[in-house]
Image 1: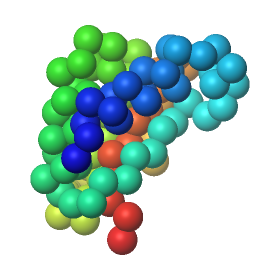
Image 2: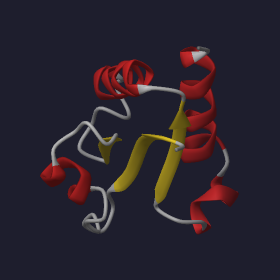
Image 3: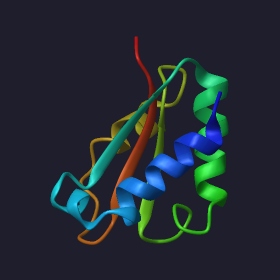
Image 4: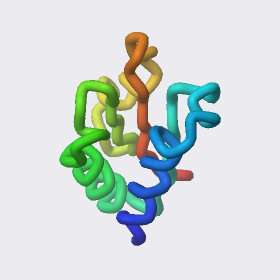
Length: 89
């Protein structure tokens, strides 16, 4: 899985081009399985930008608790961008 490429694309979307800022404050990333979801979520949470208070990372998979899954639908406060890392069923 090209995790570095995914992070580079996110950096470009979030900070590389101001033209993208007019779009939604939420980003959805599809991964092939739970281990990839967890790994990318961990990478993003450890990242100096995406792990900051400016972002909220949500892993999404059917094996996660209902509370965790429900949090994906919460609207983040102004100035906070949401990244959902889930699996396409």
